[in-house]
Structures are given as structure tokens and as C-alpha cells.
Length: 314
Image (cartoon, rainbow, N blue to C red; front, side):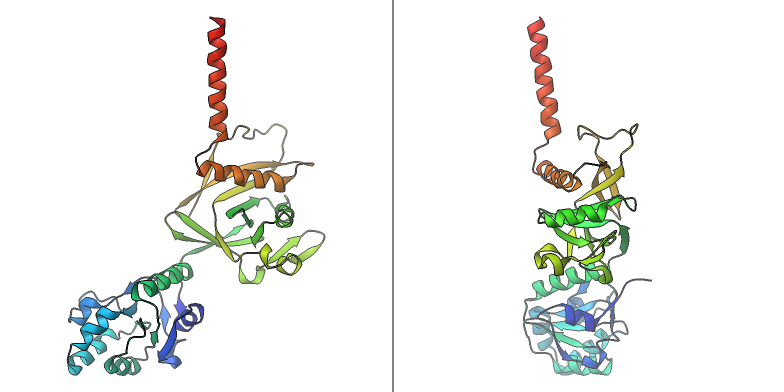
């Protein structure tokens, strides 16, 4: 079943959005799409492809055009705009709401919302909010930490030390987003967003200690509500005969929804400081995104040395 959000939740979560009329209908009206409609053609009477399931946004253009119509024509258009699946009307810039819109909305149990924001800005705000609320979600097993502003998803088998490593990272000044379960959704073609389920927010489970509240123990600066996922670090138990990447040129990638995320596998062995290693891996990944690749620099230096030795032999 598709995700939905009701208009009451929309009003509660978005600032600068207030109820003009139809407050009693907020909860029953459901929004099923992130797309926003500005009914320009519909005001001229063209309803062949009217997207009635979208929020109907009225700005200066729509209100001004409507004001030039006769009251009878305006009432007829407003009645047609009130489809059975229309979630609400939104009027920007605190523009005056036409009496015919209010009457038609009340007859069809559709709320009218107003905002002081410009039309383009409120449209972007509504789209950003709804894209996150209505997006398909996936629950991943792991720990999500913000390291120097980089969202790092730490994965691995149960008991490998993910939460303990996250605790060490928090003590080093980094921020926890989610422990054990990470709720992931795709924001756009290149961005994955990760956050904690509500029941696990700010909590970290440490074997032998139990559940700790990170915000209570370390302060508000030690947690974050959500972040983009930029890198996956997979912790694996060290095995003598298993080969691990030593030069950093064997890049792995994991596809989640339609987004590819780079992945680094790190062997876990007694005596290794995983927090420092993960911190260094995050910084090294950031350096690569900024154009510096230590592996390529090493290969270049090696080739230069081989060339120099070959020249000396000749």
C-alpha cells in the first residue's frame, strides 16, 4: 500500500502554514503524491487532465486571474476543482481567499491553508517534505554515524562490534543518527537519507551495559536526526587466509534503491582501533571526492621510481 500523510500532519510539520478553513477535515484528507498542482489551465475551464489528487496551490497569478472572472464562473470552476481526492487548497502570500473557493471547499470537506511565503518557495517546501514522507522506505541493519559531516553506515554481522565502535566515535566528537536499525529512503537520483526509527532515536545498545541514551549522556551535540548516507563501512571478522584490499584500488559499491554507495570492508581483529580506522577511512573518502587519491599518488610515485631505476641501469 502506498504511503500517505494527512493534512493535519502536514500543517503540524511545516512552519508558516496555517489553517484558514476546514480544520475539522484535516485528519480525513490524505495526501498520496509529492507533486503539487498550480491550476492555471483549470481556471480557464480545461479539466481533461486535472490532477485532483495533488495539493492545489494558488499564487498571485491564479488568484489574480480568478478575480477577473464573474462570481458565477468562479464558483463553477471552484466546484470542479474540489475533487473527491483533493487533499487541500494552499494560498500563498496571505492573499485574499475568494468567497467562492471557501464555499466550494466547505461543501466538499476540503481544508484551505494559507501561508505568508512566496508561491515558489512554499511549493519547494511542500515537495521536499512530501518526498521524504511518501518515499518508499527500507530498514537496514547497522549503525549510522555522522563523521565530519559525512554519513557513514557501519554494517557487519551481529556481535562484530558496530555499536561499541559507534560509542568510541561519539566520544571522539562525532554524532549518532541510528543504532541497530536504520530507516532509509531515496530523496533523489543521487541521495539516500538515513534516520532512526522513532522508538530507537538517540539510543545505543552496548552488550554488557544495556541501552544508553546518547543525548542524555553526551549532550545534544552528540546526536543528529538524519543525514545523507555517503559511505558504507562493513566490519568483518579477520581470517588468516582471507584477502583484504591493502592499496585501496578494489572499490566496492552497493546499490540501495537506485543509488550506488561506495563500500569499504575492514577486518576486525583484537588490538585494532576501529574508531580511528573508520575516521581515517571517512577522511580519505572525502579527500577522494575533492580530487586527491592517495592510491593514485602511490602508483604514480612507483612508476616514476621504476622509470628512474631503468634509466640508471641503461
